[in-house]
Image 1 (spheres, rainbow, N blue to C red):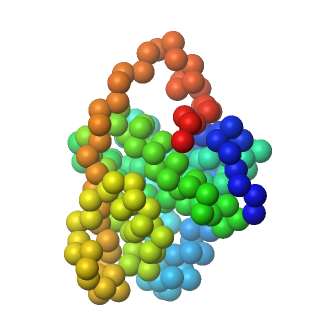
Image 2 (image 1 turned 45 degrees about the horizontal axis):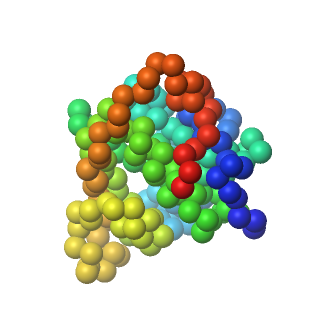
Length: 182
Protein backbone atom coordinates (compact mmCIF):
# COMPACT_ATOMS: atom_id res chain seq x y z
CA UNK A 1 0.00 0.00 0.00
CA UNK A 2 1.43 3.34 -1.02
CA UNK A 3 0.33 6.61 0.50
CA UNK A 4 -1.76 8.81 -1.79
CA UNK A 5 -1.18 12.56 -1.78
CA UNK A 6 -3.85 15.21 -2.27
CA UNK A 7 -2.68 16.12 -5.79
CA UNK A 8 -3.04 12.48 -6.90
CA UNK A 9 -6.76 12.42 -6.05
CA UNK A 10 -9.79 13.80 -7.82
CA UNK A 11 -13.14 14.29 -6.11
CA UNK A 12 -16.08 13.54 -8.35
CA UNK A 13 -19.83 13.49 -7.90
CA UNK A 14 -21.54 10.41 -9.34
CA UNK A 15 -24.90 8.68 -9.37
CA UNK A 16 -25.27 5.49 -7.37
CA UNK A 17 -25.67 3.52 -10.61
CA UNK A 18 -22.36 4.80 -12.04
CA UNK A 19 -19.93 1.89 -12.65
CA UNK A 20 -17.31 3.79 -10.63
CA UNK A 21 -19.32 2.98 -7.49
CA UNK A 22 -19.05 -0.80 -7.91
CA UNK A 23 -15.94 -1.22 -5.70
CA UNK A 24 -17.62 0.84 -2.98
CA UNK A 25 -20.86 -1.13 -3.11
CA UNK A 26 -19.15 -4.53 -3.26
CA UNK A 27 -16.75 -3.85 -0.40
CA UNK A 28 -19.42 -2.27 1.78
CA UNK A 29 -21.74 -5.22 1.25
CA UNK A 30 -18.93 -7.64 2.12
CA UNK A 31 -17.96 -5.55 5.16
CA UNK A 32 -21.51 -5.34 6.48
CA UNK A 33 -22.17 -9.05 5.93
CA UNK A 34 -18.89 -10.13 7.55
CA UNK A 35 -19.58 -7.97 10.61
CA UNK A 36 -23.36 -8.33 10.99
CA UNK A 37 -24.29 -11.51 9.12
CA UNK A 38 -27.82 -11.91 7.80
CA UNK A 39 -28.92 -8.75 9.65
CA UNK A 40 -27.06 -6.74 6.98
CA UNK A 41 -29.05 -8.22 4.08
CA UNK A 42 -30.78 -5.48 2.17
CA UNK A 43 -28.79 -2.60 3.68
CA UNK A 44 -27.19 -1.67 0.37
CA UNK A 45 -30.56 -1.43 -1.38
CA UNK A 46 -32.42 0.24 1.48
CA UNK A 47 -32.55 3.69 -0.14
CA UNK A 48 -33.48 4.57 -3.72
CA UNK A 49 -30.76 6.05 -5.93
CA UNK A 50 -32.57 9.40 -6.11
CA UNK A 51 -31.97 10.02 -2.39
CA UNK A 52 -28.23 10.32 -3.05
CA UNK A 53 -28.64 12.72 -5.98
CA UNK A 54 -28.85 16.53 -6.06
CA UNK A 55 -30.54 18.65 -5.02
CA UNK A 56 -31.16 16.85 -1.71
CA UNK A 57 -28.30 14.37 -1.75
CA UNK A 58 -24.82 13.77 -3.09
CA UNK A 59 -22.51 10.82 -3.67
CA UNK A 60 -18.79 11.60 -3.92
CA UNK A 61 -15.85 9.42 -4.83
CA UNK A 62 -12.14 10.03 -4.39
CA UNK A 63 -10.47 8.76 -7.54
CA UNK A 64 -6.85 7.78 -8.07
CA UNK A 65 -5.93 7.22 -11.71
CA UNK A 66 -9.64 6.89 -12.51
CA UNK A 67 -10.35 4.26 -9.84
CA UNK A 68 -12.45 4.78 -6.72
CA UNK A 69 -10.34 4.62 -3.56
CA UNK A 70 -12.85 6.18 -1.14
CA UNK A 71 -16.34 7.57 -1.17
CA UNK A 72 -19.48 8.44 0.67
CA UNK A 73 -22.83 10.10 0.37
CA UNK A 74 -25.45 12.16 2.10
CA UNK A 75 -29.20 12.19 1.75
CA UNK A 76 -31.91 14.49 3.07
CA UNK A 77 -32.97 13.53 6.59
CA UNK A 78 -35.23 16.55 7.11
CA UNK A 79 -35.39 20.15 5.86
CA UNK A 80 -32.35 21.18 7.94
CA UNK A 81 -30.44 17.92 8.26
CA UNK A 82 -28.41 15.72 5.94
CA UNK A 83 -27.63 12.11 6.80
CA UNK A 84 -24.23 10.65 5.94
CA UNK A 85 -24.30 7.17 4.42
CA UNK A 86 -21.88 4.70 2.83
CA UNK A 87 -18.59 6.19 4.00
CA UNK A 88 -16.01 3.82 2.56
CA UNK A 89 -12.28 3.45 1.87
CA UNK A 90 -10.94 0.75 -0.43
CA UNK A 91 -9.28 -1.98 1.64
CA UNK A 92 -5.93 -1.34 -0.09
CA UNK A 93 -5.93 2.34 0.88
CA UNK A 94 -7.06 2.44 4.50
CA UNK A 95 -5.38 4.36 7.32
CA UNK A 96 -4.39 7.29 5.09
CA UNK A 97 -7.10 9.73 6.14
CA UNK A 98 -9.17 9.21 3.00
CA UNK A 99 -12.44 8.66 4.87
CA UNK A 100 -11.79 11.87 6.82
CA UNK A 101 -11.32 13.70 3.50
CA UNK A 102 -14.57 12.24 2.14
CA UNK A 103 -16.44 13.33 5.26
CA UNK A 104 -14.94 16.85 5.01
CA UNK A 105 -15.95 17.15 1.32
CA UNK A 106 -19.47 15.94 2.11
CA UNK A 107 -19.74 18.40 5.01
CA UNK A 108 -18.63 21.28 2.78
CA UNK A 109 -21.21 20.36 0.14
CA UNK A 110 -24.01 19.73 2.66
CA UNK A 111 -23.37 23.08 4.37
CA UNK A 112 -24.79 24.80 1.27
CA UNK A 113 -28.23 23.28 1.97
CA UNK A 114 -28.33 21.98 5.53
CA UNK A 115 -27.51 23.17 9.06
CA UNK A 116 -26.76 19.79 10.56
CA UNK A 117 -25.51 16.32 9.67
CA UNK A 118 -26.55 13.15 11.42
CA UNK A 119 -25.40 9.61 10.90
CA UNK A 120 -25.48 6.21 12.47
CA UNK A 121 -22.84 3.51 12.44
CA UNK A 122 -22.93 0.00 13.71
CA UNK A 123 -21.52 -1.20 17.03
CA UNK A 124 -19.03 -3.47 15.22
CA UNK A 125 -17.36 -0.61 13.35
CA UNK A 126 -14.90 0.86 15.87
CA UNK A 127 -12.92 2.62 13.15
CA UNK A 128 -16.05 4.49 12.05
CA UNK A 129 -16.85 5.44 15.63
CA UNK A 130 -13.35 6.92 16.03
CA UNK A 131 -13.54 8.70 12.67
CA UNK A 132 -16.72 10.53 13.67
CA UNK A 133 -15.52 11.36 17.17
CA UNK A 134 -12.22 12.67 15.77
CA UNK A 135 -14.11 14.67 13.12
CA UNK A 136 -16.07 16.63 15.74
CA UNK A 137 -19.33 14.70 15.71
CA UNK A 138 -21.33 14.61 18.93
CA UNK A 139 -22.27 11.10 20.02
CA UNK A 140 -25.99 10.73 20.74
CA UNK A 141 -25.37 7.60 22.83
CA UNK A 142 -23.57 6.71 26.03
CA UNK A 143 -19.91 6.49 24.97
CA UNK A 144 -19.10 4.53 28.15
CA UNK A 145 -21.53 1.74 27.21
CA UNK A 146 -20.30 -1.43 25.56
CA UNK A 147 -21.07 -0.77 21.85
CA UNK A 148 -22.32 -4.35 21.46
CA UNK A 149 -25.19 -3.51 23.85
CA UNK A 150 -26.41 -0.75 21.50
CA UNK A 151 -28.31 -1.40 18.26
CA UNK A 152 -26.52 1.47 16.50
CA UNK A 153 -24.36 4.50 17.31
CA UNK A 154 -25.95 7.82 16.28
CA UNK A 155 -23.94 11.05 15.87
CA UNK A 156 -24.64 14.62 14.83
CA UNK A 157 -22.69 17.70 13.87
CA UNK A 158 -23.82 21.27 13.38
CA UNK A 159 -22.48 22.78 10.17
CA UNK A 160 -20.98 26.18 9.54
CA UNK A 161 -22.94 27.72 6.66
CA UNK A 162 -20.95 27.65 3.42
CA UNK A 163 -20.40 30.87 1.53
CA UNK A 164 -22.36 31.04 -1.72
CA UNK A 165 -20.53 29.63 -4.73
CA UNK A 166 -20.10 32.18 -7.53
CA UNK A 167 -21.59 31.04 -10.83
CA UNK A 168 -18.25 31.54 -12.58
CA UNK A 169 -16.41 29.07 -10.26
CA UNK A 170 -15.84 26.20 -12.70
CA UNK A 171 -14.20 23.98 -10.10
CA UNK A 172 -17.50 23.55 -8.27
CA UNK A 173 -19.73 23.37 -11.33
CA UNK A 174 -17.74 20.72 -13.20
CA UNK A 175 -18.39 17.06 -12.48
CA UNK A 176 -14.81 16.66 -11.20
CA UNK A 177 -12.71 19.02 -9.18
CA UNK A 178 -9.55 18.91 -7.15
CA UNK A 179 -10.09 18.51 -3.40
CA UNK A 180 -9.02 21.32 -1.17
CA UNK A 181 -5.70 20.77 0.60
CA UNK A 182 -6.10 18.64 3.73
